[in-house]
Image (cartoon, rainbow, N blue to C red; front, side):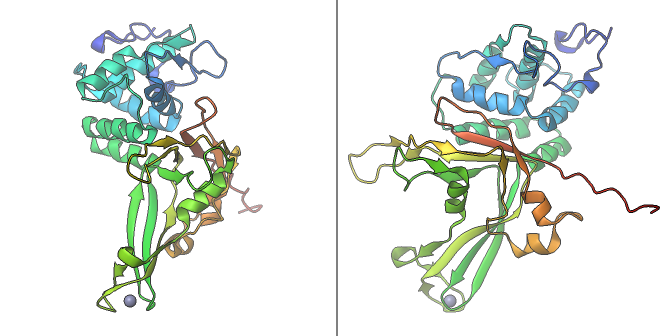
Amino acid sequence: MERRVNAGRFEENEGRSLSQSPWPYTHGRFQNGMVGLANGGLTCCVNAVLQSFYLAPEFTSILQRWDQRREVVDWGNIPYGMCRLFDVMQASMSGVVSAEMFLQCLTLNHVKANKQHDAEELFLNIFNLLLDQLQNSDMAEEMKSLYEIKLEEFVNCQCGKVSVKDSSMWSLPLPLSGMGVHRSLKLEDSLKMFFRPQDLTMKNKCFCPDCGVKCPALQGVKLISVPKILNLQLNRFRAPSRRGDYVKKIYSSVTFSEMLNLNNLPISEKAQKCGIGQVQWEDVTETFGSCDYLWGKTAYMLLYKRVEREEPPPADGH
Ligand SMILES: [Zn+2]
């Protein structure tokens, strides 16, 4: 029996070493290790974000290393609150647990738990609080790299001058507008819309250092690298187009496949030239397995997990 005493948690662990059992997939009522979170009143968005962390072993294995070093109990600490909740989820035999303790932790961080949230905003809010409060820069960097999408932003002036700069995002906000509020849409089409370059004309013209004046230009982004966990946010709310109008929800159904191929998207020359390690861009982008969840029939957030290619066997005798 392993006995853990810090913070009074995990008093007996039935001989399992915690280091050998990252949170998900160890216990739980269901064979696949999933444990539900009860809706505490408009908490479906918080619950979904928590599940997205809980079901990513790459993420929980980092958080668990921090948990084992933890000495001080702080009820307003997000990493601590998450560890506590994951403990309860892991040990649950009932299939559904309450996230109340974590909701209180959010409240202490001035995040309203019982409220309809924008999924992307809430994900970023919790993730940023988590990184800030880890107090371990190495682990924070490891967590960041799990989700960081590296992009190249470009502006092409009509004179031929091309300006580029690198940027990064934790998730890609994908547009659904322009497709009608009840139309059906493929995820790949929404991705293509995100990467489609925009004409900058009229009041949106851009200053060109070569021309010395504001000029019409083409603006867009290209992929440099994709992370292990690719977070795609579906923008289901359309801003009011005129005065007196109101925000509309877009109910379009979005179809998505289990495997996502990113090779049709614009890719930066940097990515094509360098690859990653020995790995070519095609190897990185062609295989993303799904790890998605739906809210009713109108998903807000889709997570794809990168599937590593198996190495070919070495040539015989070498
Ligand atoms: Zn120019």
